[in-house]
Length: 197
Image (cartoon, helix red, strand yellow):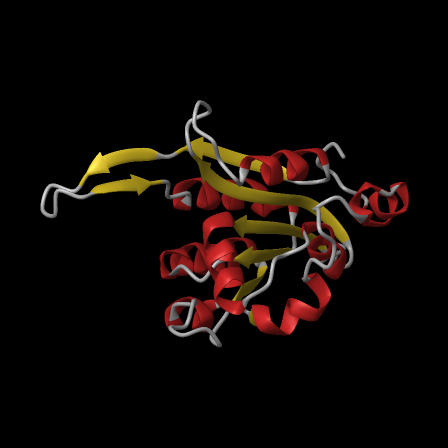
């Protein structure tokens, strides 16, 4: 049996990571995030729901930055609806199906998946990646927030759990803008991106 070289897919549930960052009081530098995970990164994918294009969104510049700097961005428009019970207007932008679909599409081509999410709905996805494809799944979220950002069942299912607090020294943004070392050609060569970058 031939052992495949380590090849990783990084999947970021944007709203989940944003909430964890906010609870922990720091902002992620996405260039440093990729740099932290050594080896060949087949794909680094950021999933987010955005307000319709005609509405102003503070996240749109960051999404554009990611799109041009080594990340694949999967986005969809948020939907607004009135809760039939409370009659309160709510915004919906769940990306669970998109994350699960991309994970299964990438599964035959990777040995490792790093999932930035604490959503317990992903437990079965993680189990399927492990069982069907023999993939090592690392889940990144936090148990140090109040309340904890990670579902216990997802943490138990993961091959490895990394608390976002422990990554903070390595991935915290220290510049005032998201433009940093990801634009340097040296970094692009080191990671041998396979997603067109």
